[in-house]
Image 1 (cartoon, helix red, strand yellow):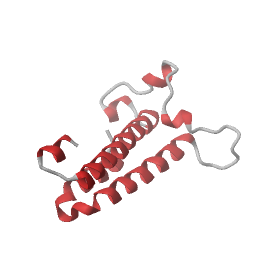
Image 2: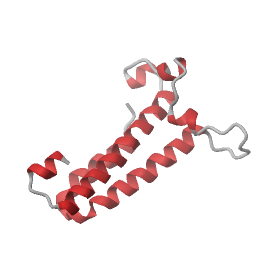
Image 3: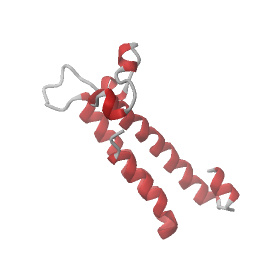
Image 4: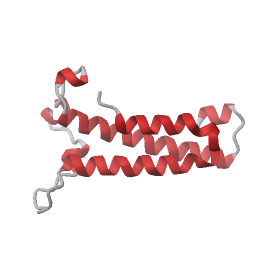
Amino acid sequence: RMGGICGGGDDRALDALTRYAEKVGLAFQIVDDCLDHTSSDEELGKRTQKDAGRGKLTYPSLMSDDNDESAMSGVARARNLAINLIAEARETIKLFESAGRRFDLLAEYILERKA
């Protein structure tokens, strides 16, 4: 948003940047939590399972439903939420057309990252 303000963005652009940032930020945290559940310390380059070990809520644990008969795990549910958030974020920046390409690439990277 600050970049938009410095760049002279109008209210519509600032609102789009704010919605994009909120969705991308939350998706980043969800993906980070999923990677923490599914990756090794070596793959991530940091100790994994710290939050779960401390009893902190993570998106996969929050979205886990032991009573659900489907095969979808908390990690899969959390990942689906991240995918939906990124799709919504990408939609908000369409008004920037080609000038928003870097925002689009950043959103795409968040889902693809492995570490």
